[in-house]
Length: 284
Image 1 (tube, rainbow, N blue to C red):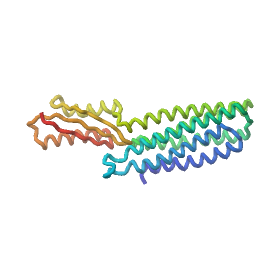
Image 2: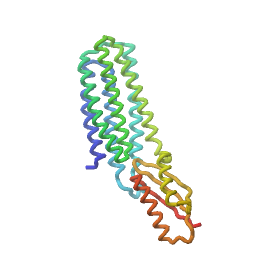
Image 3: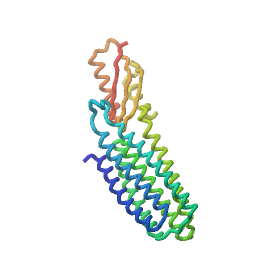
Image 4: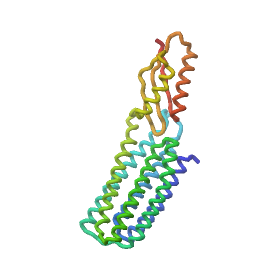
């Protein structure tokens, strides 16, 4: 099985179990912070499902309808995930404000602390696996899913700490306050995820450090004898695209020009996997 698909499936399973745990305990205790965490996990589940579907689609080879491949499906999934998180955060804030206006005591606090601790541990393990595969495959969808779970770790710890504080102090108003803090962290997460996922949909250039490294590879082959222009880069999912015009002297044979272009392409692909390089040769 494709390891991207396998780890995305693991995320779906873990999130499903955590949602059930949090909802049950949230309903028993009446804690809005635990229920907000259940909603957060539900958003994580939707994100995991979207990531699962997108990595399956994005790895499909190019076809007649998608001659540049399906890589941007991962970026679309990232944007959808960011919007879902954004909506969930505002819903949590709305519910928390209602709790502040109409406060209610919460019960079974110790169970909530245990569930939040278990959630933090499970999400730490799963997010690390997602990050590992995301780095290996350069997958924005898996990275987005890992980011969700990493944020969930912090919010679970925050909710557990808030519940423990309520347990010791008896200040039940802290419950909706903690929920609002959780929501603000989620909003911050959604903003950064949206920016990272949306950029490639506009065909923005690769990061400056990647561009500098690619240019250095080309310059190493040119060695002052040749030059190039119309240099462009972009990214779609985990696929990079590089194209430029290479100026070569007229005394170079077609085979020599072809071999040089092949060597440049191979060296770029050696550093940056899943890269398509297009070189337009111009004789001067």
